[in-house]
Image (cartoon, rainbow, N blue to C red; front, side):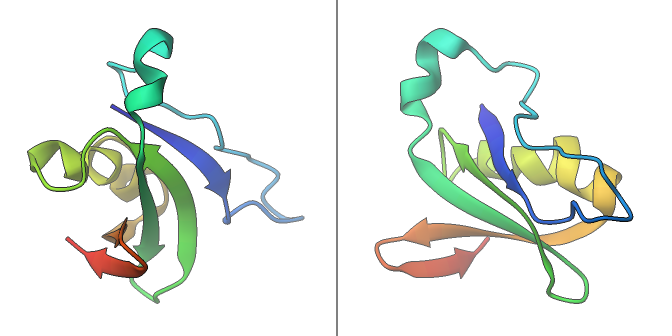
Length: 89
């Protein structure tokens, strides 16, 4: 389960704002389990999205990329905050 909290791709030429996009299994009642911060980047290492996920070390941690990031804006990497360091999956 994941949610996009910040859309960095939004600009004056692309007024789309994808903040608030969620996984298909998003459950408002379980939103407190979204404790793992992630960032998704495109192939130029440009930060596209930030969000929260309920996992950072299982197959589900790739959910934001699989469901949204890659098909939407071509994200190629996802990083999770572990302690004080961002680590790529």
